[in-house]
Length: 411
Image 1 (tube, rainbow, N blue to C red):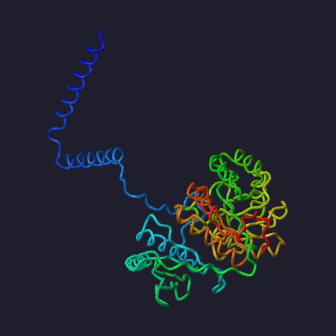
Image 2 (cartoon, rainbow, N blue to C red):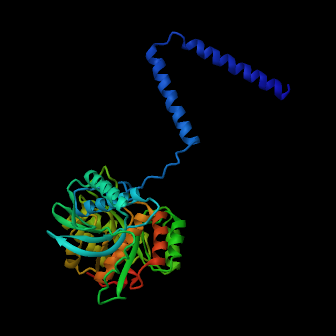
Image 3 (cartoon, rainbow, N blue to C red):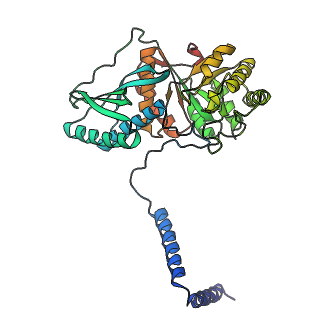
C-alpha cells in the first residue's frame, strides 16, 4: 500500500471519529457547553500569547521569597520601607523618561534611630519643568501605594524631602537640566574609601561565576553548602584568588512557609545540632574563610542559637558577615562575646533586578564608602547585577577602591 493511500485512510478515520464525537455531544446540558467554551477560550489565549508575545517593556523584577532570595518580604522594618521608597523613586524616574539614567547619588550618610541603623540619602535628578510635575505626581502615587507612612514635602525651591513616620530618609534635588551638577563632597580621607562586594547564592550558575571571576576587582564568592555546582564554582573562585564565604541557610520569620533551604540552622535545634550543621557546612566549602547568613531573620535574633553558631565558626577559624536581614540581629553582640571577627552588610544591591536600579545601589554604596571610609554591599547571581557592576566599574569615583572584604577593619 502506498503512502498516499495510508494517509487517505487515516484522514477518513479521523473524520469519522470527529463526527462520532460531535454526535455524542448532542443533548449535553447548557452548563457543560459553557464550560467547554471557557476552556477553549483559555487555550486559545495561551496559544496566542506564545505565538504573539507582548512587545511592552518587561516589568521590574523584585525579589520574592523563595530559595534563591536573601530574605522574606518584611515591609514593617525601617530599612525595608526605605527600600520601597527607593523603588518608588526609581519607578517614578522611569515614568518620566524610561531610557534615561537620571538618579544621581549626591551623598549617603549612615544614621541611627532608636538603635536601628539606616542610610540617609541625598539624590539629584535633573528635570525640565514639565518632567518635574509628572515626576512629583507619579512619586506621590507610588509612595501612597508602597509606603503609606512616607511623607513627601518641599523644603526649598527644587528640593523635596521624604520622611517615614517623621524620620527623614531622603533629600531630593530637582534642578533644571541646564544646571551643572554640584560635585559630591569629598571627605578629608579622599582616596581612602574602600568598598567590599560579596555575591551570595553562588554554587549553581557556573557561567555567572566565570563572569564574576573575570572582573578585575576582588569580589567575594559566598557559596551555598548544598549547591549543585559547588565544586566547579569553588575551583573558579580559587583559580582567580577570590575570597570564599559559606552562605549558610538560617531560619526566617516566615518559616516553614518561607523555606531557607537544606540543612538550615533552626531556633529549635540543640547546641549539638547547631554545631554539627555549621561543621558540615565548613566541610562542604573547603577554602572558605568566612560565613554569612542566607535568610535568618528569626535565627539571627536568637541569642542562644547565634552564640553556639558563632562559637563554632570561631573554632573553625572563620569570621562572620551578618547579612542583616533583620534590624534585631544579635550577631554583633554575640560575636563580641565569643571574640569572633565580625562584619556587617551596609547595602543590598539587587532588590530590583534591573541594571539601572542596581547601578543606583552601587552608587549608594560608593557614596557611603566615600563619606565613611568603608562600605559592604551584597548582591546575588543575577545577570543584571553582573552587567551593572561592569558598567559601574567604568564610571566609579577614583577615590573609592573595591577591596577584599578582609581588607576592611572589623567592627
